[in-house]
Image (cartoon, rainbow, N blue to C red):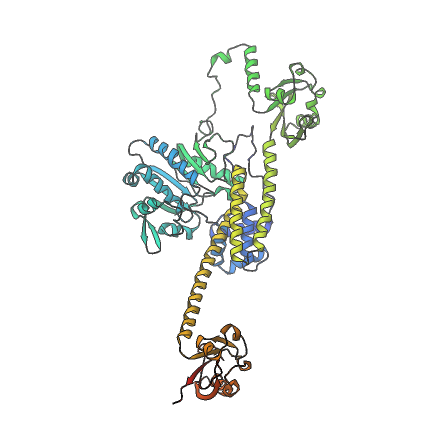
Length: 634
């Protein structure tokens, strides 16, 4: 996540995201084709996550190259819908990240209401609203804070997204019980109407939420906002796209308006927004145009303080030295003869430059060659009359193994007439950023390894579900520790959560189906057990499939002893060879055969006459049902 563009003379590094590695030109051509064909512009998305999502869809349909997939899109218009559903990860919930929402309700909304004059309309924008849980959460929050009727009269919430399917679901405002499981019961009763297995958001408050398709990278922003909520959306875009979006957000918000970002997103250095609560990612707009001056208006040449401009040379020099001392990083001034003429307070502290060093040749000082040899760089910068930047220069501190990292900027200084005066050397401390990037890389590698392991075990549904849950908990912990640098981790986390929800849905369907099968099996066993006659069911190979209780009582063989055994090889009191013909006929002709009477011996060794009837098994080719009934002789 990055903020609006910093001035070029300071040019702070964007934290959390480095420039991404070049991507295959065929992928770029595919993205341009998608934009031109369907109006979905993904060119501003991070290439790493975007390529991973498209590859996932390509794997599902057995397509290997970007070119082949573009051909598939050209001949199959329906494939666009499947692709967009794969790329656009719609993971959301009511009051997601409860701690952040609690702070918004307790601290921010009261400030918004206090700043609104009289009956002034309060305008709110939920950018990237997905299936609607976020804007409806905002409606509930404002209704709770100011009362339902006043909320209906004064609050207007705009909810936008690029996914038209998600917008249709959001407009309906209908959710299952699972979506509302974390919502307090009191809020559920006040703001939702229960209808069977679903809940509908109350219609009067629903009409204050306006849904529409909007691309935050291309379309004009909604203006005059008191609150703009865009959570876990910016992290999918690259640095350049993030800057443009922040510029639009700055324009959209009214003076003093609030910006609410996701927990993995961050504004670094910005003169347009100030942090209200960094932990909860809530910022406040300070000015539309940098330091408050309208674009194109030049500062006045005359000074606002005559005593400064009319003072003597000593006072000017004192002002110049004071300005140098308050610089946030180390700055050295070298004249044209290579003599050190000035050093900022930070430079003197960090590099041990004393007052006696001012006026000495720069080449005699340790700073000229350690941590990096800058004398040749100064010469090159002055000869070529251009700024030279050395990024990530390492400096060892004392005898320890700890290191500091600096961006060294050498800038030639010349008069208005082009006469070279010397050069300035700036040492900008980027240690925290470099170390943080190393840590992010390590964590990302660990996460990618864990993700591959999750994929390899996806065949076992319950095990995968547990591992995914564990992975999400690890991601949440990592996100808390990394704060502003885990955009890529949060992206992966949402992908995992989306897959987890799909797996949970499949698991529920399998559980219901298994329950239905168990009920059916129990019912059939009950029916067979309730029949007073001995019943045996054979498959097309005359293997025993079922052996009811009456058959156990008559012949003394348990069901588990005979199941999956060949019926005509069983040795019990019934002469099975004598009934082979009627069984074969029932199977071959698919008709009922018998009854025939055979002499048999029951489990107690008593002789009895047994009547045999055979019927074909309905719905299964070759199966036979044998009914054995003892005959009472007068």
